[in-house]
Length: 200
Image (tube, rainbow, N blue to C red; front, side, top):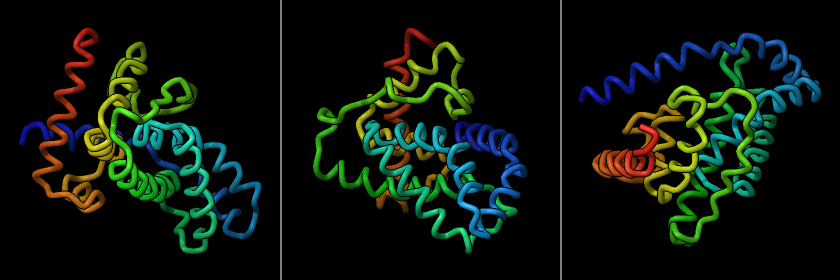
C-alpha cells in the first residue's frame, strides 16, 4: 500500500511539470487548417513520443510506425480536441492504445526471446520520462534493463511508471485481471533490480 502511495505522489509531481500553455496558439491554428502549426507540434513531441512507444515495444521500426499513425489520427481528430487541454497526453494516449494492440499481437505471435531491442535508436535529446526516475549517467542502463523485460512485464511496467495508468486502467487496456497486473509489476521490478544491481 505504501509503495502505491509513493508512486501516486511521484506521478502527481510529474504532472505538475507539464503545462502545455505554449501549445494553445499552435492548436488553434492547426484546427483552422494551418498544417505548418501542426507540423511544429509534431516536431516538438515526436521524439518524446517515439521514446515512450519504443520503451513499450522494444523495436524502433514498430515505434516509428505507431508514432506516425498516432500523429495522423490526432490530426484527423483535431476538430474534437479542446485547445485548453494538453496536447502531448492526448496524442500519447492514442499512441499508447496503438502500442497496446501491437503488444497483444506480439505476445500471441512472437516469443520474448525473439524480440529485437533497438536501444541505440532511442533519441538522446529533449525531455524524457527516464530523467524523472534515474540519474542522468544511468538512464541508458535503465532503458536497456526495461527493454530486456519480456513483453508481458515491460508493457505493465511502462504503462504504470511512464504512462501513469492506474492498476485498473492497465487491467482494462491489456485485458488481464488486477491480480495479474500486480504480480507482473512486482516481477518486473524484481527483474529490474536484478539487472541493475551494480547501479543501485
